[in-house]
Structures are given as C-alpha cells and as structure tokens.
Length: 389
Ligand code: AMP
Image (cartoon, rainbow, N blue to C red; front, top):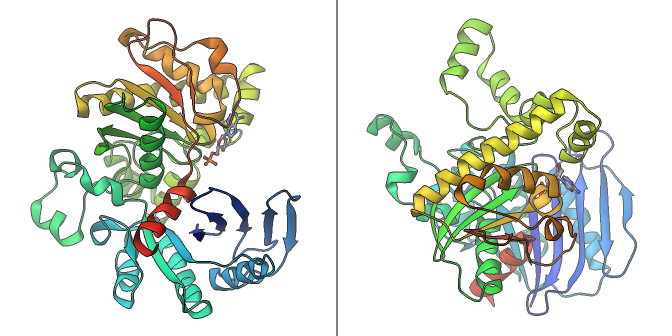
C-alpha cells in the first residue's frame, strides 16, 4: 500500500510518499516559507539528487496543489493519505478516517493549535477534492497522550474552568513516542517495560511509556511546556505571564511570541536555536553557549526523573530526534547528570554515528540506554493502512 503522509507546519508542508509494507520512500520534500517571500520546495526522489523548486506559495492549499503536481510525475499510485494533526484534543483519542464530521473536529479543536490545525484542515480539503476516490486519515500528535491517567493529565485549576475550556495535558510528539516505543520494544526483544522516551529536536518532549501505555509526558495544554527547546522556554512559573503583561506592558500575543519563538536555547545562548551552532561556540569558550547546554541537560535530567516517577522506575531510556539522534555531547551531558541513579553510557558507542537503532549503554548501568531514530511518517502510514488497508 502506498501512502502519502502530509505534515503541515505553520509555514511549511512536509510530505513523504512511501510503501508501508517495504518502507520504501518514493519521494519526500518540504514546502518552505509558505505565505512568506522566498518560498520554495525542497524535493527528493529515491536515488535522486535533492532539488530546490522556487515557486509562489501564498498558502497551504497552493502548496498541496504543487505537491500533487510533482508527485503525479512519479507514476506511483496513491492508495491512502495520512495527515499529521498537531492537536486532536478530546476528539481524537486515536487516528480516524476523514469524513465531513471528523474534518469538522480538526477545525473545532484548532484554537488549541491555530497555526497548525487550520492549515492541515485546508490541506485535507485539497486532498479530498483532488483525489476523491482516495481515503484520508487524521493522525493526531496528541492522541497517544489521551491514555495518560487523570492524576497526571489534570491541571489543579477550578473544575468549571477546566471543563468549559477543555484544559488538560494534551502533549505532542505522540506519534513519535509511539514509534520509539515500538522500535525499542522490538530492539530489546520485549525486554523493555518502563521506557523514558526522549524526543529531543527543535521541539522536545519526554514520555513515560509502561508496557506500551502512555503514563505521562512533559508537554502540556500546548507544546510549550516541559523541556527547554530551540526557541521555546519550556516550563516557567505561570505567574511570569501575568507579571509581564501587568508590569511590562506586553500583550498576550507578544508574550506568546516571546515564549514560543524568542526563548529557549536561542535566548540563553544569544547565538542560535540550533544545537550544532551552540556546541561549536561552547567548544570555543562562549560562556552563554556553555550555559545553554548545561541548562538543556539539567532540565532534561530533571524531567527524566519525573517521567520515571510516573512509572515508579525505568529500565530503558531512548534518545531520538535531531539532537537525541545526532548530538553525542547532549546525550553525554544528560546521562552524566543521571549518574547518581547508576545510569551510564559507553563513550565509544555514544560517539558512533548511524541511522540504526543502537545500544550505547555503559558497563554496569542500571538502565539500558538506546539511540532510536524516530520515523513519524512510517507510524502515520501504518495507521492509514490499519484504517483503510
Ligand atoms: P528536529 O526538530 O528533530 O529536526 O531536530 C532539529 C535539531 O536537531 C536542530 O535544530 C539541531 O539543533 C539538532 N541537530 C541536528 N543534527 C545535529 C548534530 N549533528 N549535532 C547536534 N545537534 C543536531
């Protein structure tokens, strides 16, 4: 079965066309700078060179039209389409086939992720119009976290407010954490029972997964909570928001932008949101970059313990996503802070680069430590196959 996976960001649209059975990727790409000057599509086909196609991309609908245009030249029949929806909230505790009703739900919960959900809903409209005979499936990034027990997902706010505004921990990266569990379980031959899954990319979150069940995660109502990220501050005292509005004269939107786009590693390092730049400058002696890396690992180690507490222990931890898969320095920093728990990695194994799942556990470690490259697109394609195949 050939599945087209579409992932709309606020100003981007990633796509991948793959075969679910063979995991062969026919083509993939990203429409970047949608609605901004200098838009282009980075496109890649199996065994081919990466191409950059410059074109006008005023909105996501037009971007989707271009994607269909490009893919129509491939001579690969699309059997189903999977859509990554950032926020599924209470409407999507699992993946669902797109109907008029379920598409309405994507828009209904969009106020919780306005930059992403409306864009993906527009793309779904375009897919249904373009290929009316092909089924579409919504795979919500929050779905996995709807399993989290109430003791962990409820906020201690007044009950009527919580109910009226549907406030709870929804989390994100659920599809990635679900994949990481699956790959870890397979790699360890079902010996993993209590996993702390560490998705550390430009967005970053942890997830406590016990025998496949989601017990807790670090992101909250929105993907702002928890770890320090590329440009997001992660957990701060919520009173900071009121203080900035009252005393600093900032509007709610300005604080929102500050906390989501101008904070995190970018703010602390004063250099970049990209861990590669920060590591390079830290090596050259930059004090702010060193601090950014220390704060990143400090918070990560602290929240790993929080996730372990949700399961009353952990036997495995898995590093994944851009930083987790590629940055030996960040992995080593985090594990060093967990040394008091007996967690150890093997420095030599940690320095090896590979696209495969690998074990970097140190001798005598209390916990198995893995690097698990994530594959959200494959996970989405599997859901499409389950529901439409
Ligand atoms: P993602 O959001 O999963 O694509 O991760 C993107 C982030 O991964 C980038 O912003 C970088 O900070 C980080 N990253 C990617 N490659 C490396 C690397 N070799 N070393 C350190 N960080 C990396």
